[in-house]
Amino acid sequence: MTRAGNPGHLGFALYQSDTAPRGVYPPVALYEWSDGFVLTAELPGLTLKDIELSIEANRLTLRGERKIAYPDDGKTSLHRRERQAGTFRRTVALPALVDGEKVEASYRDGVLVVKLPLAASHRSRRIEVRA
Amino acid sequence: MTELATRGQELRSREKQAIARETTRPGPVFRPDVDIVERAEEYLVTADLPGVGTDGVQVRLEDGVLSIEATPGFEADPAWTPVVAEYLSGAFYREFTLSDRIDTSHITARMRDGVLELHLPKAEAHQPRRITVTS
Image (cartoon, rainbow over all chains, first blue to last red):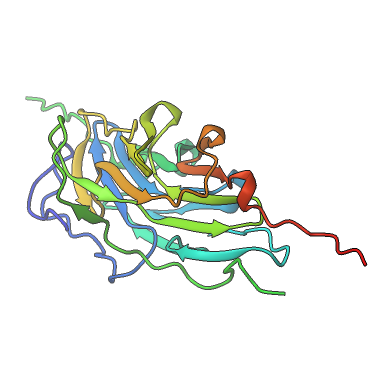
């Protein structure tokens, strides 16, 4: 679901997300705040070394692998298997350039939170008008 | 050797399944994905509960019904303006009827990185035993 046409705090009108084709993993939530963006994704059961994040201009890429393994000692049987294991790779195009060196990411309780401050050139500036 | 772990395939997102369940707090309630594995001495129930911390999950056993109820601790900061929401957040609930082969007093639960792991030991009488045959 995208919410297009609402100028956020930063005045971006008509933000059109690169609406992910159905099935792309992980689904993300994107927020605006005074300094830039925040992206969150639900990625339960990962270890830090299984997540790879990279930023280039306004593109944030999430890559990783979710591993699920059960000991197989010959006496193990699967009654129900609903959780998925596998790899993921997704690039999200952000509405503006962010400062790659100031991006912060944390992972807690299975949720990845990425804080993306705007690049200096994209911050709003007050322009002084002189007579 | 059976391959019990799926690796290498690409993950696909699936919409969370909302269930009709009234709780004291308003908001959607979702059915978490669960794996159930039977081993020689125990059942292992694993549930994906993203956003839920150790304090946010309650596991109950009543009249042979095991229930998992969880609330995510992670919430978006109210100062953030939502721009795109590709997934919904809300509480989780799921229940299972257990066979009476479980030693209910020794169930253990562990919550880590949004995954709940429940160990349900089988009652002594139901563990496979090797019977020595003598002549």
